[in-house]
Length: 537
Image (cartoon, rainbow, N blue to C red; front, side):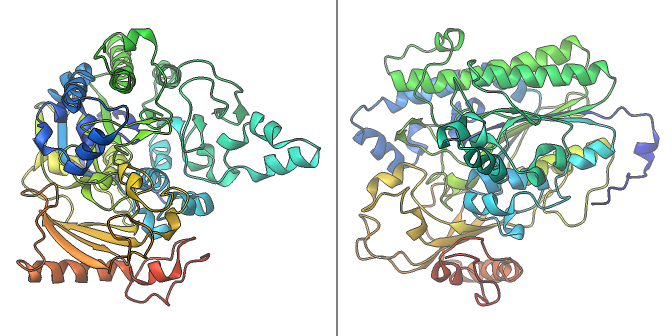
């Protein structure tokens, strides 16, 4: 990709380029974010999530969990008083791998045929489209720490070990599960340094997934939130020692499963609610809060904080589920319906905050539609680079400077709509995770305060509520007035629905097919299904 310096009156001045620090959590819901949780009432949480919570054998008090969420991130609350909290931020996808690809490329993953994690396993990162390379071109030292999960595993490593008589256990002991093929390695996608795992989860302790650049690290005994933060701090300090601006992308494991282990005592001691699940879950979130505080304290000591652009966000919505190592508790996705893997707002809405002391002088809460795809374009613009024309992301400073001016005319999502990744998977006839490919596809489009959603045909024998199946349907909601999506406006606002449907179909006609999708399900999502067929049923 060609990166062109932006020649303007501003860039001609000797303005130091800001450091950039991105902190991304995994499956962290809007309700889990203390600045949001503090404003939230239990009656605003998804009633289906609360009903599920009450049905658990080892239930917990949701009010106690809500109060714990308000106490879990005290430092982030102080930062919220210095920066911008975006109250209508969306992920690029409701699933983690395409969502992360969307952040790195500033582009909807659907444009590359990436609709689910299994698509990313095939297509990886589109060549030359990772925006970190643009920061390299601007003189930045670039580093990635944590969850990569945007490429295929290194199958050659596995083949080599098996060919020499090794076992599958020895393959995993060599780091195969956390490995990545060369095309998708961070070094070939704009990062000078990488301490990472290319997998969907990473145990908090004793992980055998992590690679240091191109060297497998073996068994890492430390608590991974602390380990990843230490590596990020080391990288940032080295960059400051070299006199270079840095871009650090810190993608933490928290709060993805497995979560049912204790955080170190210094974090765990903050919570003693009488509910093990609450104490464990929110101690892990508090550990993240302390990690961010450690990084900011270091930057302050080094005199670098004022000109550091910090982003905080999640990859997608929370799972809102307990069991199988998961402890995604109330208040989950806050005042939004559904969870990860679904096209309800609970799957695509994310917490998001931006702090830049030298440039953002007044705290603000902005309710315009923004996206995780905007993060790196904002960093590029702040560095003085001209944004590529062929991306979906935009410079967030436009809406920070002009909060009344919409940043995005619309956003859209296409993919699977399934219960496999959250609490609704407990109300299925078959095993929701093992049979997830049998669920329908869907799409959603946001325009202003409205969200139009289409959910494809549900086959019989999948969900307890619809044992005979269910026909495909549209629904239209006003997100501002009805965040829980309880009032369908299809009949009241047919002109809005038709306009939004036409806008989606125009986009959908340009999309490549998924790498793996049921043909019948895909055919319901695009105007010309025969134009691009899924590569594999």
